[in-house]
Amino acid sequence: MNFTFVDGIQIFYGVPSFLFYVSIQFFLGNSILRGHSEFKNEFYPLIFFYGFVDLNNYIAVIIFFDIPSWGLFTDFYVKHQLLAEIGMFLLSTNTYIIILSNLVITTNRFVSISYPYNYDKIFCIKNLYKILSITCTLAISLNFPRLLYRGRYKYFNEYDVSVFLYDNNNVNKAYYVGGAFLSGTVFLVSLFLNISNLYKIINLEKGRINHVRADLHLAIYAAILAIGLICLNAYYVIRGIGAFMNDYAMYQCMLPHFGWIIDIIVFGSVWSLFIIR
Image 1: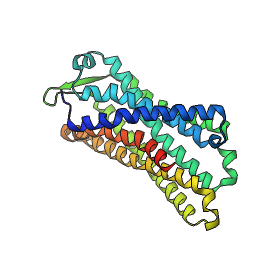
Image 2: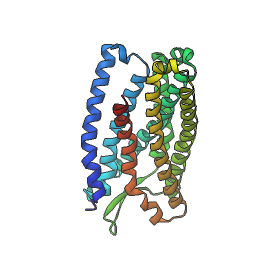
Image 3: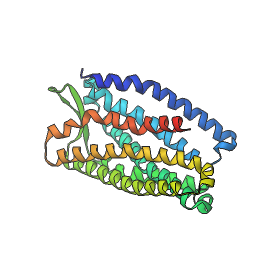
Image 4: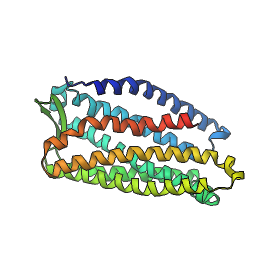
């Protein structure tokens, strides 16, 4: 069993954070359905959707990534190839949805702050559903080709872990290059929009500050999501370099970090929103 002190810390904060996130989702969903005035802004259904994907991704990471990396149920994971392929498809698709949702959330704040008179037209509920549908469709489409290739969990005795790999190393390369390109592009666009949001908020007339306090809080929330993107992009880049160079040590060195990177994205956003709110 390859269970480290860091893994213990992740479980220590992860379990209560997960339960807290579930309670927030229940409260937010109930408030939206009941039509509470504070939650009529289209931003909150977007946050609810983002939270749903977050929680699903957290569960997928534990089942398809953490447990085999801890060296648990090794024979089960190694023997069930189809489970490995479907599991990694779901994990990758959820991660891509999170990346794209980050861009949607940041754009939502940008339009709200920079073009408030067009906000209701662009982000009405009808358009929001279309945007979320496009986000999911794009994430699924980008990952669907992976189902056409054989993948499996490979057990490494020297590390006592099971790691998912595609039999064709070119697929491994394409996965990390694609992930690095997507997360890097979204980060750069989000960085530009976040800087623009912050600049406009700082330069508002003092008499209008109270009217945009919520925009400031939500802009900070979007900015914190970008921090997770930086870490995720570094993960994709380093593992991609390892795959291209056939350097297993470099490829392996980032494996233990994937869990806490996802935790930053999943739990960092909800805790920051709760503290700010």
